[in-house]
Image (cartoon, rainbow, N blue to C red; front, side, top):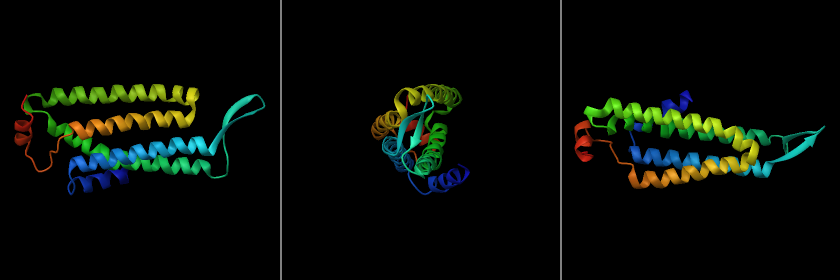
Length: 167
């Protein structure tokens, strides 16, 4: 996570915010799709001594999931998170920046809580394939929204950004 964040800090000065966010969103979405497919293809439910559990179809299958989760984290921490926090500080006009950022961070933490709360329920009810497929689908929706609404702020002063998005 630290290495990916450092990478993101280096990249954000060299590339547009939109390009970084799109790259990160595509990487996150593809990694979630691949995690979901890996669960479907490489694991099965098995009951041993009356206890059901998930079992790998071959040795090393769990390492594939682990590697894909690291890819997910790299794109999230290296591409999406730096742009998110930077744009959050840039996008609000000065007179409402503190309040706007407060609401945005509050919303972020609420959604984090919801995701953390429903993830185990989804995993137990639908399995890894469907659960990660669901989150991949939500990221596709997010990508569509980003293409439509995410502004480019690189190279603009805070005053220019405020003028561009005059409320």
